[in-house]
Length: 61
Image 1 (cartoon, helix red, strand yellow):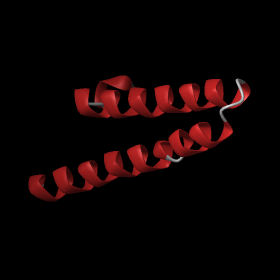
Image 2: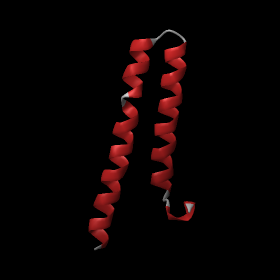
Image 3: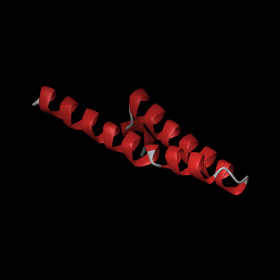
């Protein structure tokens, strides 16, 4: 299953996951505004990864 993922896919997924974990860490330590700001990055990172996949698929066609 993981053989289909490129290095870029893995890095984007790891960065989104780390952003989520860091956001939760900040939230539970009382930094709610900073946690919300960083938590908003997660869907943006994943959307950027989808965009890169779509651009790559168009080049291959």
